[in-house]
Structure formats: C-alpha cells, structure tokens
Image 1 (spheres, rainbow, N blue to C red):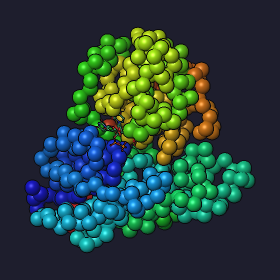
Image 2: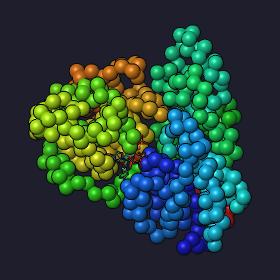
Image 3: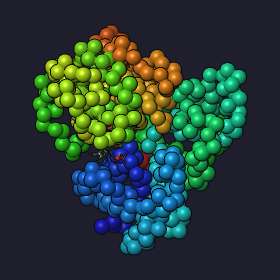
Image 4: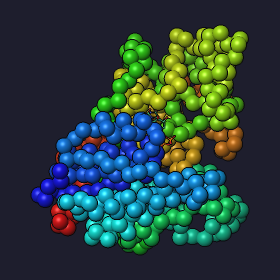
Length: 471
Ligand code: UDP
Ligand code: UDP
C-alpha cells in the first residue's frame, strides 16, 4: 500500500524483455536505495516468462500491475516496423492505465515511461503527475535520435551520396553511416516510425541507462544550450547502469555443472538477445568458427531466421548425434567436449557472472552490453538491428572493450575464419588481455557511479527530491 510519507512513482513498460528488464531494475533501485513506493505497469502478454519474471520480484513498496493485452490487428499494417506497432500498443493501453491510476487511493506523483510510452503523458497530465522518459539505451543513441529527427532525410541522403561517411552530431561522436539506427539507414523508406521527440522535450526530464563517466561528453552535449541542449531543454538524469544481478532466475543444473567444471574465464558465451536470429548460412559459419577456435563455448541457439520455428527440433535422419539440421552435420559430436548448445531462454546474468565465462559474442543490445561490463567480460560485437550497430561502434572505437567483424555491409556473411580469429583474440591473445583490463576498469567506474554518493546514485536522489516536492 503506498504511503503519503514517501514519493510514489508509476513506471510504464512497453512490451519486450529488453524494455521490461530495465524498467524492473529501475523500480527495484528506486525502492531499495531511494525510499520510493513504485507501481510498475506492464502490458500483459502470453509470455509466461515475462509474468514469471515480474512475479519473482516480491519487494515491499513495489507493486506490479498487468494492463490487459490489446488487439492491434485492425489498427496497424502487419508489415509495419516493430517500433510503429509498439506505439500503437501503448496508445491502446491508455484507457486501462487511466482507470487503474484513477482508482488508486494514493496516486503516484510521477509517471516514468520508456521511449514507446510517451503518449501516456496525457494521462499523467490529467492527474497532475510529473512526466519522465526512461531511455533504456545510452546517451549517444538519444543524441542521434534527437539530432537526426531535426534534419531532413534528404540532406542525410545527399551527404551520403556525396561520399560523406558519417553524420556529425553536435558535441558528440560522429555517426558512421554503416552504423546508423535502422530507421535512419533505410533513409528512402517512407514508413519511418514517428519520433516522439516533442513529447520528451515536454517532460520533466529524461533518465538514461548510462553513467556520467562512461559518456561524459555526450551527456554534456545533451545539456549544453549551445549544442543539443537547445533541442532537449529538459534535465538529463544518467542513472545507470541498471542491470539484473539478483539472479532470481534459476540456471539449469546441467549448465551450471558444466560451467563449474571449466577453467576460469575459459568459456565464450554466444547469444543474440531476446529476438535476434541469424540467416541459415550465417549459422553454419558461426558453428564452424566456434568449432575451429577450439575454445569452450555456451551457445544459445535460435533457429535461423529463414527457417519456420516448427523445424527447430527437426533432426535429419542421418544426424544421429541430435544435431539439428541447420547446424553442420555432426557438430554435436565434434564439439561435445568444448561446447554446450542451449535451445531455450537462459538466465543470462547468471551465465555472465559465472567465473568460467571469459568472453561474450553478443548482438550488443544495450542491456546485454551493460551486463557484460558489470561482469567484466570482453565482447565480440555482432550487432543485428535497432541501435545495436551504434553500440558496437562505441564498444570498439571508444571503450575498446570489444572486437568486431570487419565486414561493412549487413548483407555480408561473417566467415568461419574470421569468427575463429575473433574468438581467439578475446579468449587467448594478448589483445584480449588488454581488453579484459579495460572492461574491468569500466566495471569499477560503473560501480562507483552506483554507490552512495556516486553520480548515478545522486541523479536518482535528485529525482526522489523532485517527486517529494510534487506530493
Ligand atoms: N523468456 C524466458 N524467461 C524470461 C524472459 C523471457 O523464458 O525471464 C522467454 C519467453 O518465453 C520467450 C522469449 O524468452 O520465449 C522472449 O520473450 P519476450 O517476452 O521478449 O517475447 P518476444 O519479444 O518474442 O515477444
Ligand atoms: N536475456 C536473457 N536470456 C536470454 C536472452 C536474453 O536473460 O536467453 C536477457 C538479457 O540478459 C538482457 C535482455 O534479455 O537483459 C535482452 O536485452 P538486450 O537489450 O540485450 O537485447 P534485446 O533482446 O532487447 O534485443
């Protein structure tokens, strides 16, 4: 039951584990470190796992409310981009959010939404609440979104055609065209989802899952009235890195036993996030690359993107060792002493924190990236979609905690030899040792920001004060 002596904030998560997880972590941190009462709203889904993740968090002063799922089939083109669909789902959920908040005896004084939930600010306004956006990605991504929304696509395209290689972002790292956000890269597409920048600039502030020391110049540019501050005009709160660390999901016993048996930092963990898949051809190359590297691996496999899900467990008749037919023939037999292939969701934070894990081949989703840093694990950056290519660029060029394939076009396949080389670079080569030292430095810097008196801690304290004032 919320009480009147502490700030009460409502957090609204859009669908997808990549959004729900950081919103949950924000809620938990607000409750445990900043004396908030928090109510988390999420859109009920059929995914039992999302519900179980939420149920597993039983904290005093943290309420979790499922808003009924919505049917958007008649409202949006089935081929529309995911982002466009997310906005529609969130919009359609407003009536239930409104009635849920309206029915509360002690109403929240603030509403915090992720990038897709800003339409809900109209509900916040009706109830006189403060409005905040939580950007679950990093500050540079936010800077790119705001800057690029202001310039005409035609100019970007002209620059590109004129042979420019990158887009200049005031006060920030420039953005190579090969790394642009998906919507920007498809410059000639007319169905670019609308960017809700105006909603964000009419908020009371933007929270970012980053920390001051990690992205100091970008954060400064977002605040500087001569740079991006002229567009944003609202306070910036770097409050991260917020990642799952409490390990309330159980690691499969077999996987744990296998990891326990491996030497320290000898295993490379391979995963492309909650939704990433590779093409059939790329899967084969990755399998060969891992095998050739002769390094230990745990690979969370999803069937290739051009395979129907139903074929997942199909095993060719001659594949007697159980290797699914989208992996090289006999792969399970040849790698039985070095690898573990897992065809289901795994509690990633528990794998990354296991002492035997020493590398992460990742799609560079921002949550995965932060989890890797918080566990001091070097990365192989293998971005797929959304802002992942930008994340990969930061990891390799700025933080120098990852290696990245040299191919420049997304359509190209990364070959087995290159995969083998990258795995060996981070796991055995000298360069890998240097990367390991740097990622551990970043981990220390992150912990400093989160500790009492650190920059991220102070940012959330400021937010708590703002909300108290508004009671
Ligand atoms: N999942 C899980 N445990 C979790 C979170 C997700 O087993 O803590 C599974 C879930 O059952 C689903 C997949 O991971 O098969 C992706 O989950 P999500 O809710 O993100 O679904 P999607 O993005 O595919 O709609
Ligand atoms: N995750 C997990 N098990 C899996 C796949 C993903 O626990 O098998 C978690 C991962 O730890 C991270 C989140 O799901 O917290 C994925 O978020 P991220 O931003 O990395 O990528 P997205 O899935 O949104 O592309």
